[in-house]
Image (cartoon, rainbow, N blue to C red; front, top):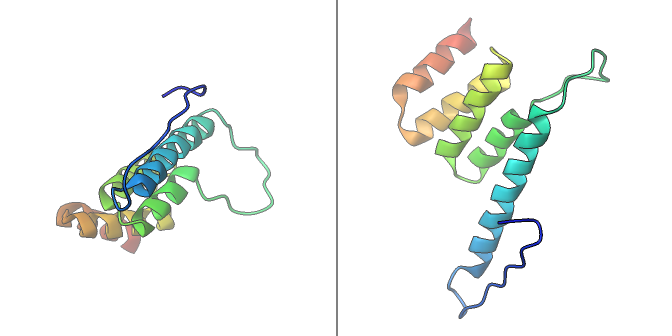
Length: 113
């Protein structure tokens, strides 16, 4: 899809038009946030702690029952900010939801340190 594209969804009631439109909007917003965060450098002085956008994305994905995508977002967040408690905790929850007990155990072990 491009910025100039016009998408028209049509169909009978109950066919999933709203779900499709929501998923399309969510995916576009996700790509936009990721691109923006990758290009922004953190200032040396901030008014308070900053939660990385990828960690926030993981929280959102986990809350919307998308644990596989959430786990990937947490992994990216941990690559840029290792040992963040929020990302480790979220990654453990997402790994549990996916059934990846090994990753969940690793995240919990890092949390215990």
